[in-house]
Length: 114
Length: 112
Image 1: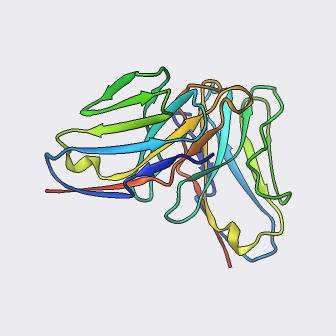
Image 2 (image 1 turned 90 degrees about the vertical axis):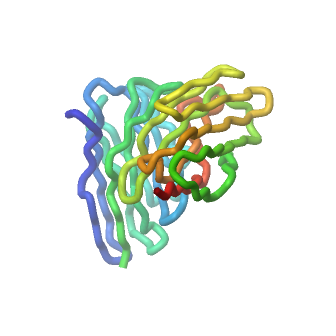
Image 3 (image 1 turned 120 degrees about the vertical axis):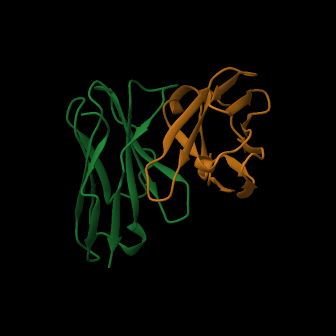
């Protein structure tokens, strides 16, 4: 596609439920990143994938968070047993490769935990 | 690891200049600058790699002092369209290459 596509754009769910967020990167981009942005805050790094290398999971805040990527295409971020503090906008970005490359962001998924 | 941005907010009249600073406590490989308008995705402005490097985008330019681990974004003759939140993202070397740490942002408001 022309840009990074994320779905759903909004998700409201009850505390304790699992949610799955999807990211479709720009075609040909080997690197894919997930960030969390709380209201009025900066972007918090969560995880990134580069080609077939093991993902850098160092930013995942707890074991309730996990992410997968199929080859160099779609990625899903899963949050299990959601908590109210998980409420945020989750942004996905992709770049041609890792390191010294501009990151192109999707519009994000706004997650609200009731 | 999060860089420190200053100031937190800037209010300008159209045509005025502004400087936004970004500093890190870690050795840096590169500094990225992004602008985010309310409710929208961040948009890439520029990357600076080498110490002393300067780049420009429209009337927005930036510098990177590798030794001081600092970068500054210069907005000259500001336009209404420059309003938004500016984030710097810093990238370290070695095992952290590829991982961007963003500052808390500088909110820029330009009035006519």
